[in-house]
Image (tube, rainbow, N blue to C red; front, side, top):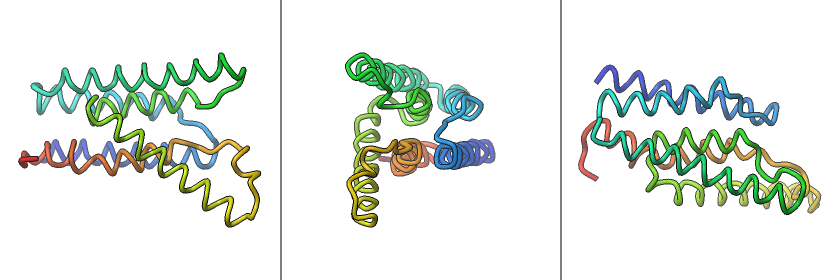
Length: 161
């Protein structure tokens, strides 16, 4: 149980650092996304090896899915619509939550981001906010925390879904 708590703390600290960096600098540094990904895989490899394959597929699916969006948008519009740090962050969240959780996780993150953009445009009474880049990392982290109860915390304490 103590090892589980250590991994939960690592997950929460790295997510917090990623949110802080993305809000302040518009970046999701590899020095936080990579340890987040590997800590998820190490956790499942050590404490729940039966789920490791699902988590590896989650990391791959998260990376490939957002990389396809990144490169597709960049090819069509000749500019970034999504930062590459977001691609790596979703891969890390896929390592923690598994591939089955990714569609809902992305939907929740996009819903949170859309709601925040609407609230900011209403508050500023301008649609100009929509044209400015909006850091997506905090919304991915929020969606990850939303998904955590089902895919991490319940698994770690061996509760039935």
